[in-house]
Length: 225
Image 1 (tube, rainbow, N blue to C red):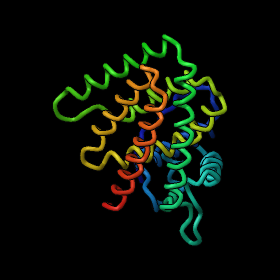
Image 2 (image 1 turned 135 degrees about the vertical axis):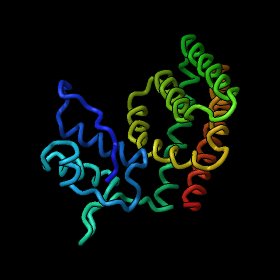
Image 3 (image 1 turned 180 degrees about the vertical axis):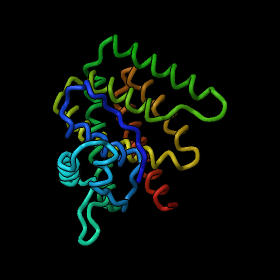
Image 4 (image 1 turned 90 degrees about the vertical axis):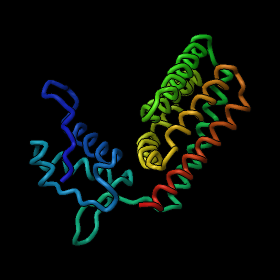
């Protein structure tokens, strides 16, 4: 059974079922549980020192979101997205991210330009280091955070948040492709520059190119498995 560290403390106030849900979901997103792996209620309950009820509730919630499925004579297993589902998610992501970028440029404030500059410098510093670069998803989510705040569209932010778990999973797999992590960071840097300079059309094109490259990397990495 995967051994993922328990991430909550007894004094935290959120319900135990939410902690269990987040724990299992992160294990799936981070690749601790892989497609086809069984998730056994009893083992998880023993590992997390909880009853089987919150485990069962968390798995039901994850199944409704498509992360797991129940198979006859096998029980609960981690789902595997079909190529059509993967393409659909990337297509939706491209449309939403393009809109977010457009709104971010339109509503951007001087403080956002300062944040873009800080991210650009941080990426340049990371790329200048020899050997392994920093995790690229760090910059992905840093940029997305500024985009969403600059765009000032709570509903759009909520939609993108709904895809964030898929994005993390896609990024983890895509970065297994040699050179993709560094290339993605370069794409993030170019996007941040366009956003800082208020170049809306360029920024929209760059985000579409980045998502298309991410999709290709993910699909290629899957084919190699």
